Image (cartoon, rainbow, N blue to C red; front, side):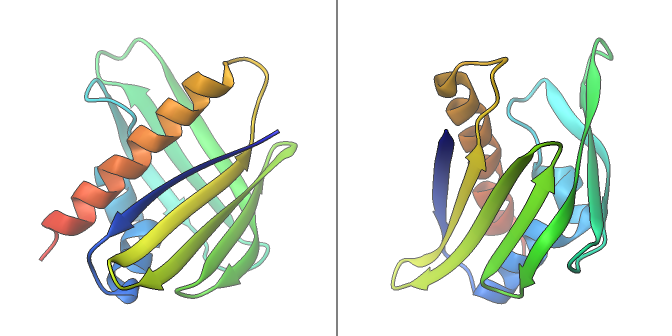
Length: 135
């Protein structure tokens, strides 16, 4: 089962792409709620390159690494990656209202599709706020 979330950001596609793929930016927006944060991120932005984000509860009670390998990199247009036995596609679509960032990913079985949709959408909403606030 695939789940898709999206947001539209009023910014040039180069700025949106950079915020999505730069480790310093990722640590600022990659959280689903205010009680979580990303403590570190790494990006090797090429086909076969690895990425990783360390996500932790701010109270220190839990943390995990979200990591994978890029399978497609088309600057300012598309990123595809594999993480575990799952895959995801991130599309950057320029339009009159700005850049739509659409993320489609394979659902997992531990959480309901609704929980997964809410979590990934919350992260994408944080991303949009981050880009909008960036000079």
